[in-house]
Length: 59
Image 1 (cartoon, rainbow, N blue to C red):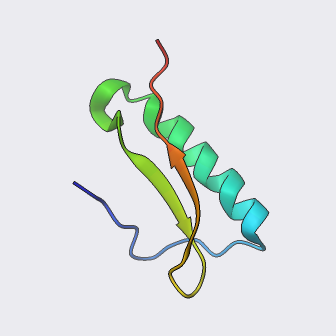
Image 2 (cartoon, rainbow, N blue to C red):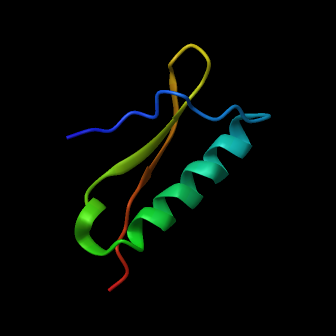
């Protein structure tokens, strides 16, 4: 199953996108196992993936 953010968030550069994806993945991990196994992907304006951050639930 996948969820796509249809509005997106425009960021200044790839580094900011990677950081933002990390933050979202960490926030989703706080929901327990609900998002365990999911990844948060950051893409550029052309839809090319520039980062993939796994949602890792703390043990």
